[in-house]
Image 1 (tube, helix red, strand yellow):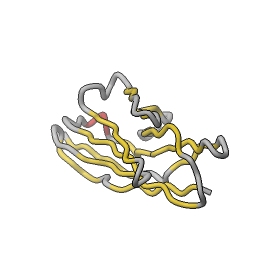
Image 2 (cartoon, one colour):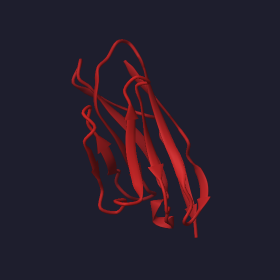
Image 3 (cartoon, helix red, strand yellow):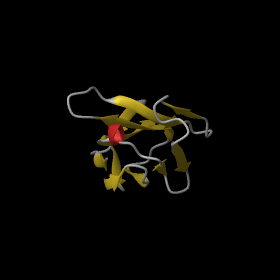
Length: 117
């Protein structure tokens, strides 16, 4: 079992920044793609950004130019730098990692990001 632990959420004013972190631990595993998703109240969970093991990134149109995903393979961690935050970015953010050893995806517990106007 792979455990993902998130940190870095909080309350920020519009235009501010936050940095989310997600650290993986557990039995031996080989992490492939990693990603961040979010779920606002009353809405479905949506993709925010992904990064492959080779470093290729993909972003939702709504966050392009404002958010940056990165990973540290040595620490088995990945990050989401969020700048120019907007109230519509308010959601619970979840990290996700794909284990190449078992072909399973794992989720973090979620961290709340709230942006006030």
